[in-house]
Amino acid sequence: MADALHVPGLRGKQAPKKLPAAAMLTALGVVYGDIGTSTLYGLKQAVDAGGGAIPETVLGTVSLIVWALLLIVGLKYAILILRADNHGEGGIVALLALLDARHAPRGSWRSKLLVVGLIGAALLYGDGVITPAISVLSALEGLKIDAPALAPLIVPLTCGILVALFLVQRKGTEFVGRIFGPVMLVWFVAIGLLGLVSIIRTPAILAAINPYYAVTYLLHAGPAIAFAVLGAAFLALTGAEAMYADMGHFGRWPIQLGWFGVVSPALIFNYLGQGGLLLADPHAAENPFYHLVPGWAHYPMVAFATLATVIASQSIISGAYSLTQQAMQLGFLPRMRVQHTASHEKGQIYMPVVNWLLAAGTLSAVLIFGSSDALGGAYGIAVSLLMAVTTVLAALVALQWGYNPLLVAAANGFFLIIELIFVAANLTKLFEGGWFPLMMAGVIAFLMLTWRTGWHLLEHARSKLRQSESQFVDWVFENPPIRLPGAAAIFTAASEGIPLGLTHHLRHNRVLHERVLLIASISVDQPRVAAEHRYKLVPVGSGITRVLFHFGFMETPDVMQALKRACLEPELRGIDPENITYYFRRVMVIASAKASGMAIWRKSLFAAMHLNANLPAAYFGVPAAQVVEVGLEVEI
Image (cartoon, rainbow, N blue to C red; front, side, top):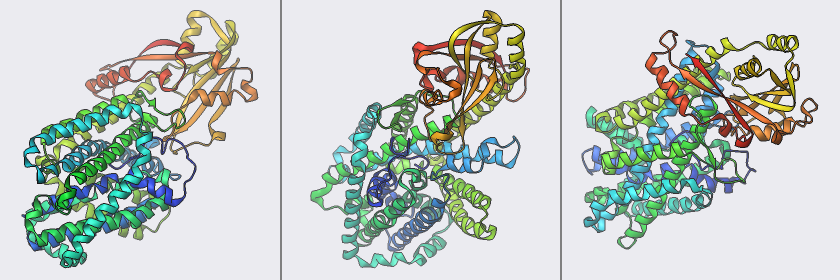
């Protein structure tokens, strides 16, 4: 998976910087689990698409995979794309924030970029559903080599492993996270050595290092076969986006060190080794990865490969939590319940809704397709589209930063042409299964856009109902209410104007606390906000103070903790956040055909999403015993 693919806890807060070697070891499991297990099925699918293990096909497909790894992963991601960081963070969300697409006027080119970026983010979910399914299936299919009678058990075993994986998510992944790196280091050493032994036995495969074999094979194979091979070979690149998405925690240097020092040599050796085996024994095309393994080690390798694919799957599941949390922070998705699974590590999170939706999608993929070969048709289309989107957005960031336009066009244009060829190749698999991740991505992107548009309509409707601050203060002075001792805090979605809940409360009850805090949480286009810039106090008058909290898109909005710090300021001295009442409004959205902005059925969909969103008090961590909710109906 691409964006935000990481173990919870690694990016939720700034961790102490590790030494490059230690950070590289951790990154091996977190960043490279997906691409590292592509060796189980990548070459097999490409050779099958090329018509079988004849020498021309073997040399051509191996050369294609090796050069795709060198150019797309090594040159594009490891060297170039890692430079496009947002205060150290990478990924689709970071690029959108750098381009300031979220605050662009509707109809502008930047607002259209937001749509493109949201589609890119949605593609990650489609990819994330397929990756655990194809990875675990391909690992267990090694059982068929020595025990063909076990073939009917592969799908049930895969489902059992995946169910267990999704069940343990609520326990947290701290322990599993500790063993990710060492296990994957052993995995890369093992697959590299297996490939090296095969290369020594069949050195003729080294000719595949020459890109001539890839080019001539594609030119002479015919368009249909060439596109089929390109689509299958692309499976070897899935997971490359994780290098960019996880840059924030590990840093550019450890990720580059991991790729060039461990992962790239191991993958290239293994693919060359599989190719050498196929040159020597074409019958090994049934499963070239497992045929590299000595007979006595088949069953241990099946177990090891299954563990490696579980690690890759775990990273993707964790990444889905992170991506969803970022999307919520930036206003692309409704609030969902977030559970922290480690008290000492804020980034260790579990999201039940995301977990079980992902589980349903993954298990459906296993049951619908039934084998890694069949899933190969569904895999790759989402990732290739995402890579193309990333290339375009990164080019715009480079131009915004003042890089030479001709240089940007040459570099990014080169990669975009290659990626668009891969996109076209993967589109040939649309009816073989490519529809599955695209359908999921389309649904998620539609929900994101519906939520964002609906939220704007709701905020516009509420803004017309709010009193201005000066009007409210004048009203209080002209009609003095009964002032209750102590303080109250009122949460509001706006950074100006008086919340409707406060206006209604004063109008009907004629009482007002001596001190009132108007609290607003604002998400900024930075990963994190420094403590000294966390809040801003704005006096309103008549004992009312507006408190604006700023949170980055990588942060959990811990309002209570931030308020405790703000209450140390002279303007709020004497207010104890643990002994005041917090007022929240529960808005009931009424879909109306009168107002414009969205079709009535999409307004109804937004209203349903809003109704089922997690309550703001729970989301912001306010103790339930201190909460008072005020109901409000708003028509959009």
